[in-house]
Length: 73
Image (cartoon, rainbow, N blue to C red; front, side, top):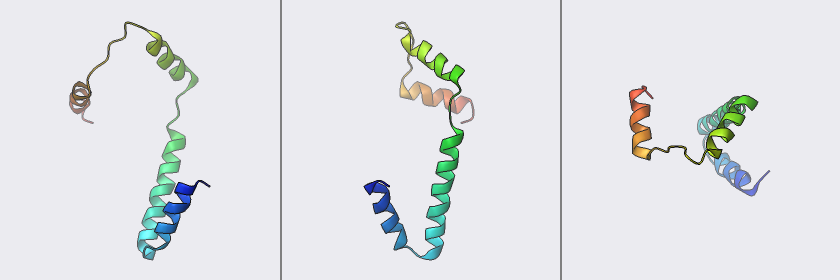
């Protein structure tokens, strides 16, 4: 276990039981979703292909946020 995780757990131990349960639930959800958010080999290959393209077009953070907002995100 890393020092940072140990430090976090020591702080969580000082919380009331209900808050400890909430923190534990959040950590479990994080780990669960982290495992679910994996790219397939085909997706990894596509990302590599696109990143290797020297003429790829990038958008600004503001443009990206606008596009996501239009998609309802």
